[in-house]
Length: 168
Image (cartoon, rainbow, N blue to C red; front, side):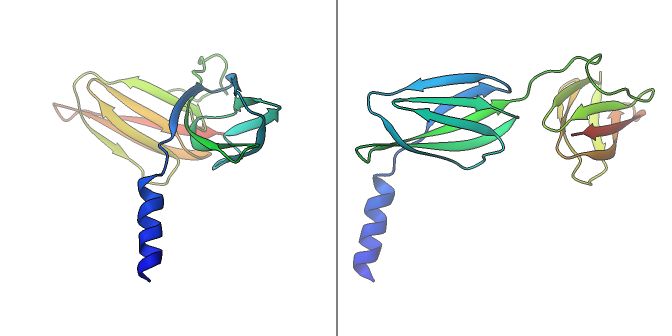
């Protein structure tokens, strides 16, 4: 048992830290290395498309989110990237038609609602959206397709209800 614990401690102390790789949705980057790439792996294949060609790796950000990418070279060495993909902003004209007063988001899309005097945010907890208060605004993120309801409460107790629809 003791040799196993020693081995685990040694491996954890020599573990490499992942290099950050920030991307935007739909962005394509090419990573070029000094050695040919033998193998690629990612923790979320729906987030990133990876293509290796010799000593180059083409990384395409498909949607917003977070993942790790492991690049293993022909000599056995490996590097890890911590990839964060930011969602693309979409104009109101490009999105699906909304009912009056309804906020329509795509999955992964982030929208800031101005809310002067915002004191509290109430959200129907059904997993469709995530909301956080940021000063005089509420940041709404679409998580999964569906409908939800958001209530913005100002310092005087006035409430504004915003229906939210998330589309694929």
